[in-house]
Length: 342
Image (cartoon, rainbow, N blue to C red; front, side, top):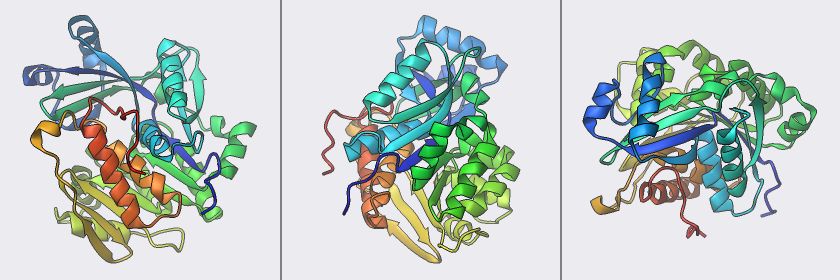
């Protein structure tokens, strides 16, 4: 197999600096947060960030779903700049920290820098093995499509063969997503999308529906699948059935849609066309589970690291599960120094 060219995979999402700490359930209740959920902050959460950085021992970890996935993919590929990331940051130390960590991991970051708004942050609150994410998008929310029109970024888009966008980005800049989706369809490339969180299907379903016909690979977990089914008016909570229905939705290009739904320690459900396959997941011992934060991002990173090399679905799922397990054994979406996958 010929070596993977630079800029093969483009990811687009909200680059966020995770402010991570361990909290009691009472803290989540106080701020109206649920375990194992991801939401966008509103004004009432501003004081929560102040309280976190003042009263808790916090760790700053580069985050943002797609950026996490690309860092994991690069860790496995072990060959820098095979992936590129688009998103917006502020002109501040958080933005610099994000860029340096991503570049260190081998990701070619092409941020749009906003000089007037601060870099986005995400409270990553760990309670036992559960995690609750509350994102304050700030600069990430200011991404504009004209960043993609820059000559150097146009070149990168032409080089890329695969695109990965998260549902989270639908709240920010749908025109930029549709630009990449149309390009992918026109040049017979592969466009992949993550459902990202139940609130995307609940509150942004119109925009999501506009993008879906372009989606060649759809990722999600069981909660996101359930919210997606509900938004579509499907009377089922069966993950296999939802995956089949999602695969059968109208599509702009002729290749069959691949749907990949994870279910924590339960088997990964994959539907290609009308064929359902279940891939069992090796269960970790209870004492090995440190933090499930970033497990879904890592799964996608592992999956895509193989998929963009033209390896089959089984190899991609196996690598995705490996990556997710490595992440679960550590706090946040951080990888061990050495990747033992090879």
